[in-house]
Image (cartoon, rainbow, N blue to C red; front, side, top):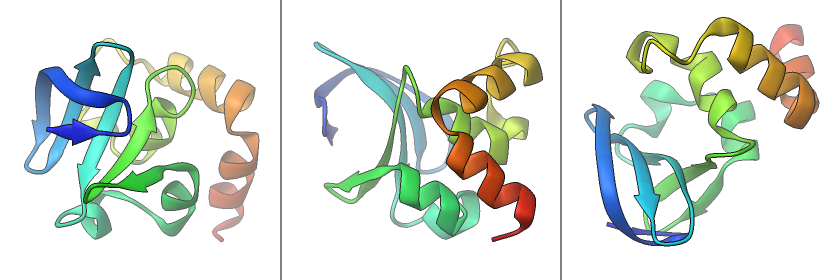
Length: 102
């Protein structure tokens, strides 16, 4: 799979069209255009990078945006506390937007 970080080396399927991926230099969560409307709000799409038919959520800062909206398909070790801490540190604008229902 081609991503904004390069060709995937490892991929873990979270759901149909949704993967947690690693490349030689980076990684994150990618969501196919085919299922994006099922898993992503418009606010989440504003955070993601879009390329090659995928929405990309970078592993260091943006993964929590996807996890906040899709906790049921995320690994169990992605705790609510971790998700909220990451959002508060890196994506407060997104968090405020979704809390207001925008």
